[in-house]
Image (tube, one colour):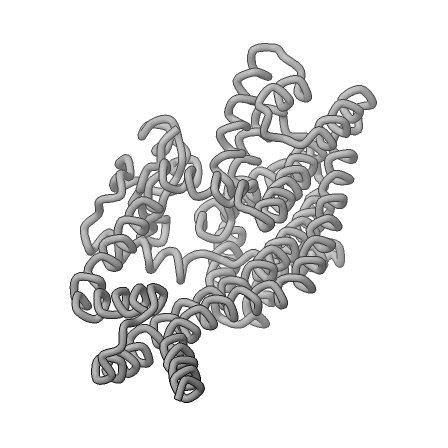
Length: 414
């Protein structure tokens, strides 16, 4: 499995670019053709790109991609339009007019035009991969084939709403610590670069022998101030290396591994990933899609390369004739609770229902974990910040305390 960058045009002539995971360039080209795109260029992404390609990728990411919340709102509205019996083209044009401008609005307007020209809604949506991903399109196609498009769209809306909710909860749990970490770094730099040099000048005039703690902090301050350009260069190189690594499959895999294993927050991230996986897999199976096709689609919904690689192993095992639960358990990447529900679902023929129950369980777990961490993280972070700043302040005032003791002892001796 590798990451490929592509450049293609849709049927309106608009250029689209982005990244897709696949086993070969031919597979990527075939998938893009299935979406109705004219492929201009496909190449394996190795982290090195020219400025023009970087800009195209950035523009597509920020402008051409739809947020989960916007897509959930559109799906809910579309389900209402279909259920109410309003003609599809008329209803979609109304949704486009009532919505604020954005990727979804532009896509909906284009889909309405295509449907009016005789295309199916799934084919029309496939021309806008930045808004409607493969999982969404497969669900729509399944609904068209089964004649249950209104039900499928309603399930998609519920699914996207829950995914957006769980993502926001995970983000909220990590936002405050990230803010405190940045604040701590900036405060420490301010003390070292502005306050510590002031004390350094005072102590030089006194000519007093300084404690080891004070000498250490002064040495760090002098080193940073005396090599400011080198320090900035090192920071810039490290950040650029991290950014370049994150554009590669290997870098993203390592980052996703770290997210799953990091202390405290790794548990929340893992539960969030499991929730998205279970709900997506359950919906895909419930819509009538074959297991192997569902496994292909659920990889992207998991939004984690570690889990996606495990699902690839599951797909190969299922294709070889092994059971679904057996194949998942053999990877060692999925919790036993999910395996037990999956096993029961296989035996009773209610795999989709029990996967949804697993997702609901993890949603509650994430909510509980976020609430617990939110109540504990503030005092913990305050203690950490106080300890760091207190260490620097103490190191600067320690010579003054020692000087005061010396003066008191001298007075006593006289």
